[in-house]
Image 1 (cartoon, rainbow, N blue to C red):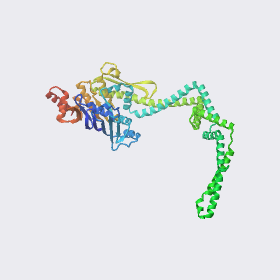
Image 2: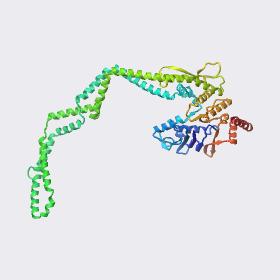
Image 3: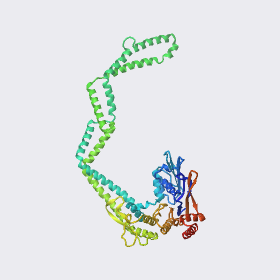
Image 4: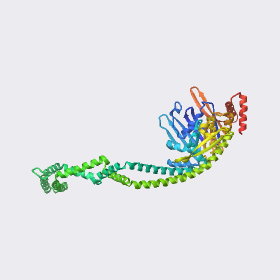
Length: 553
């Protein structure tokens, strides 16, 4: 159940904390007082799109916070686990959402930040909200089938069927693609063969591009390399003033210096090694220069190889590794296409196997639906009788589909005849707005035991009905309150009088400021509110209000 709802700076609400009890909760108030803000706040908690215009004038943000106390948290915990959150503790779930004028909206579950999608997923298991136009959902055959499956207890089996159906359709799609591509396969096979041969003919090796570029750089600059080597050896050892001759002269001077002052020997310890290293450098450069060969044919060969690699890179990948992966993928495609007949045969067999599994599960679901449809119709008809339809007809008609669909082998169409002697017709064609609301309530009542959603919200679904019918609607909501928490926003005193707890939304105007408040009423205050709703003279309205409360007791 919803334990509390805190609303701050949302529309006309400045700061309200609404604490709720179990059973039927009635919410009343004059038109324009702000009853719709409650529904708006709940929709925000359920992850609906935020409208920044709802933020109270003069404020930067609005906040909505809801606390739920749940008897069974398994479905909720599964959503939390998928979102990477801890499960509920002691059945408590806290949802908070903040909407900012700057657009920096935030949402939290049990104090942890979450995405809007998490709120939407949680909402499916927390609240079932129906407004004055939500009875239109009854016109949807998919929604009707969902209701029938819930009544039949076939939701788990339907999940298995849908998994099997997805696998079957995936196999059918793959088979269609393969069969369609076979008709245009000759040209495609030729293209794949050309691509594979072009890459394979190059005989690429991983890492060879770097080696070839290095060899090409050396071959292309052979003359310059020889020139540089000659310059180095010339400066080291050739002609007067060469480095090595200079070192020899320095060596003689050091030798004489050490003779005169042996203490200077430590100063020149590194000289000998430097002299040796330069001599070895000269030898190494001469060896390197001797190995240099300027081969025009080799250069042309390297340039041709580089051109081949660059051409393949433009077509098949940025690196040799990617080109080789492209070759492997092309060969896989080619093998698959060349073995198309064998692949098609395998897929045809797989399609038949998966279709057989779909039909097997589908028939089990069909039996459950066929057994449940008349029972649901009887149950709904019983509730319709309570809601003022004395001799109406309600049917859940099943119609086989030409082929298995996502939701089974058949569809359902709710048929309705509000008056005796009339043939039943599809609900969407026969029921008025007021009748639709009562049919919705009858269906929800029939599903009460199977419906695990703890909170039902009815926002003025009693619109377009008369006073006597409104009382019947209220009693039906009160009946739902035995298994669910029910919030009924209503203009009918007959409905409000049946609530276990009654709250009134009021609007206060002070200067240029308007505030909406919600407070629980009981005893005399409740009589006053019901009398206001009844209208007429004050005395007679109060008498009528007291009689309503007495009748509801």
